[in-house]
Length: 549
Image (cartoon, rainbow, N blue to C red; front, side, top):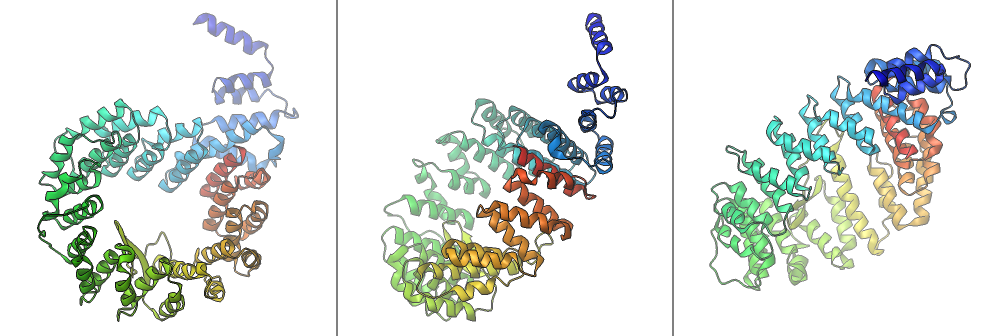
């Protein structure tokens, strides 16, 4: 040890201040580098770069503040410094974000670290696994599932015993489910044997174990089927293997409606014949599923029963029955055509959508007319194997402004696009009307469709949007240009719009520039590192890392 210290002292004594700084930085000692820097001449061409390297090595928020202050006080051409120095500066801002008091800043750092996919990013993610906010830890497990690093598997195994957050443990279980090795499998098996395990956690553990083997242990499957917990029986339906689906037959009489319905759906797809008796049907959903099941078993009563349910006084029953009728395919064409004149406007819309999807283009104008007359907000609903249009049940959320209205507009736009693809009715005037919609995302979806289906008109539309008086529409047009690989034009618009934008829009622009990844943005992004908003500094940092990669 004394010999090593003597050699180090001798090396430092003989070195110039600049060489001493380099040596201390190699030893990951920014304090020593800072002291050595005091003896370096400030007119040395390397002085600025050495200062930036030194300041970016301090893994504290105070060190990052000094770095930010230095950047603001000394105009620097980012292209005059080495790539590794620029990257080191970026990582300094991300590390500072990971240490911030606000969870939002730590979340931004998490996204940046994951996006960069470098060793420094893994270090930040590993640090955030100890975050006091359970939501942050949960997201790290989610991100870690996409990174084949042993450290995430080890921490996830440890989390099965130590993690207090239920949601974070669920994400750790899913991470282990994606690791196809004996260590992860054994950890899940050990976890499954614990007493007083939450039913949903037990369900997720078994589901994760099923990912490790295409053929789940039949004993586990039989145990799930005979369990008194409906969650277990529902899981049995979801993971039944190709050769074990007949074990689900008793579950079509399950007292829990969701379990019985799921069993009917699985068996309806697997079986080719049926010789049993009608199960106990506890609600209209199961009645509709049973009718569909009969159709799958070549029993003509299936279609008749579904047609009867279309006349139910309950709208929900009519819609569920239609979704099963639609799943019967073109064998149900007469019934679907009849439903196109149903008194219920939602049933009519569903029937017209289905007929056009099946190539019946004579119904295109009727769909447009019915859509124009439908005042109710609508959305596309998925029910396992089945889907249908329903009244929009999406709730308002402060995270996404005007979410219910957006869902309705996007659903209507998709129906108009369905007609447009048939090229039997001129839908361009209707589609272009959506371009004036101020709800964020709607105009851009319409423009994207027009661009993909009508190339010349699409470019004309985009050029118009790029010069629109509305600031938001210009930015949306630029985002679309980036998607369509017209990156240089998109980049110029985004950088021009940035100074006059609000903070939330600036954050969106920086993320878009990160996706474009053009090195032409380096000077712009380096300047954005000096923003007063820490969120924007972090976004600029991971956008810069994206351009350097």
